Length: 218
Image 1 (cartoon, rainbow, N blue to C red):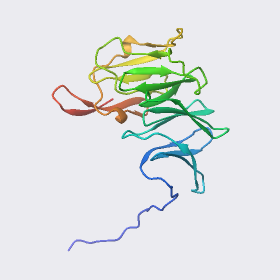
Image 2: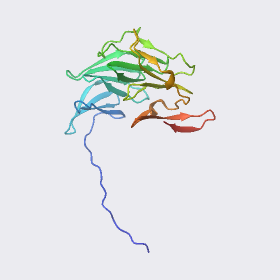
Image 3: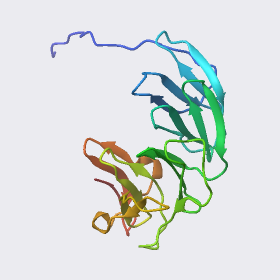
Image 4: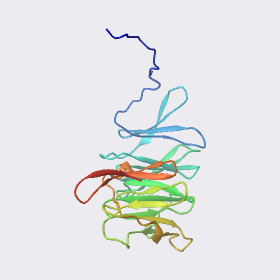
């Protein structure tokens, strides 16, 4: 018979128990180390002792939520809505209804993307509580609709469609500061909008080819 041995391995233990179920996003704020979670319709904060504090309620749908920050404020998307959260006062406020599939912050501007319309809306500079309805941009280079939004550490907005995609950058233009970079166009779309992730210096996502095959692309 072959020799056998029992090896000790690292296990896990419960750290915190929350009052809501259905986790849709966990986020740690880099500047403060504060940890937030979207679970069901609850926005909760878990401290270093594993104690949860409910900070408010949000809308819920079948999609994950998103968190992003300009430093002092959080931009939260959940259930198609966009919320601001002021860290200093722990104030959660509904800002935009029904137009926020996912969100991000770049150069102080809040960005929310609506998959139903393909539109990206902008907040005021360094103010996630003000959203002028005239401040938005949409796709004009190709015809397949955008499906996701991702912001890279190098300052690009990656916008994959169903078959192709674009990279936008801060061109310093007015009234919309962002513009497409023709050299950042790409020829693979996205099959699962929330599969898009930052991996070191690259952006990866799940793509679907013209014959129905699935591929992870970078």
